[in-house]
Image 1: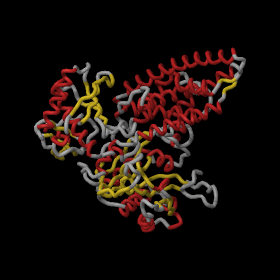
Image 2 (image 1 turned 90 degrees about the vertical axis):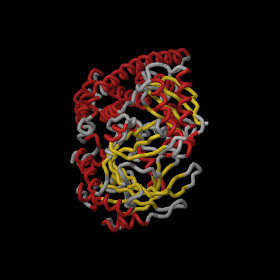
Image 3 (image 1 turned 135 degrees about the vertical axis):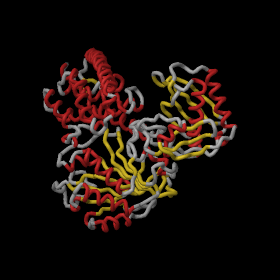
Image 4 (image 1 turned 30 degrees about the vertical axis):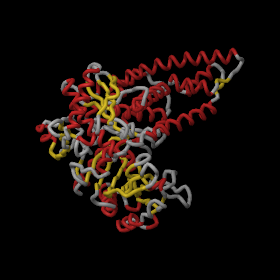
Length: 584
């Protein structure tokens, strides 16, 4: 069964069970500083999981483009991916454990025809924060899973939360028995031996983890599920890895034909990183030295390095992009519309990296001369790390060059430095999960409303071209990106600030209506009117001043906002300016 068939079966099944099919959100989160990329289907839905009403109702289903960065260095083995598709279904205060589990069981056994005896499940064993999930276990027994294939684990395995705080709860996970021999008599789903593969995760979201580490009950019980499409495709096709499926096979074939060695790890890295990079660029990402731009740069440079390791002429990269886009177009047709842009970004970054490699080689020669002058024959770990961190020069290339000059490399100490660097990066990345949409509190709601006033004020002062290009909200401030070809003058900023504060003092009522996208357009509501909206949308109106498509939430009256103060105006990117502002 092809991946597109599995996706369609999933969406159709849940649509028959009363779920509305919603569109995949962008890989690049909107109004959410908590993550670099959309890492799960629930991220765009956090306001609704916390009680905000969704215009499409209480039962939703979709496929969501996701990208996770923590395993970049693991890509190349038989299972790790950075970009993947997550199929999901949600209950926003509607059904709960029993119906969720029964639907999952029916989909697996009836739609995908997986034999029931191939399925094992896990449930939360309970702790001081929440009781043992006997209800889920009983639901599985009722569906047809016997006790010997029901396991109980703790928070590390059967509790789900995105980051440090926010909506969370116990989950039940489904595992596929591959038929491999067990690693021991105690082999079970918690094993990493490959016999059991996790295929689906149903989160029963009834708690909120507070900043102090305590848990409180949510005002509505939700179900949040996720099924990895690439993994399910691999299992149903009886393949060993996702790279053996139609999602990667065309690119893998070309790489094998063009390479002068049989390095399977490098072929997988090139295929996976190229696919992930295409999807990031397709959703508006660009290489840079910070945050998500750095992740894209890292993916493209790692891909280029492994093209070199395979001995493939870098002129072949354009053809590889064509093959990858041709493979993706059935699942994501819009990549064809952005093909030229995607190619330009990738080729340009590849060319930059080739210069980096040349600079790295020059720095290596300096380091080599230094140790020879000292009569030494070992390049220190600090030098190797500096070449990697400062110049992007891969450590394995340092080793290769050192071998050519008959000198050694202190690679063990480099590995220690690198692990410390990874841990710091991971911790910094974890900080991204703090706050964001999950931090839906009084101040973030006020700032969210203030962005609407700012958006309209900018269009009044600068012109209708000054449309929103991005937004980042925390409890302390708002950051708003908008289209404008030049720097905004101090006089213009003063006028924008004045207009916003006038609307706050007018005590304007903030109202919300649900309507079709077509009705929203006709009503004059601001919105990008691209593929990001579903059939029904929410339109927030602020008095007679602003009308905009938005998921919410917002204050009830502008008088709640206080005083609006612009702190900074700066360039964000070509043709895009950025304002940082606070509410006092």
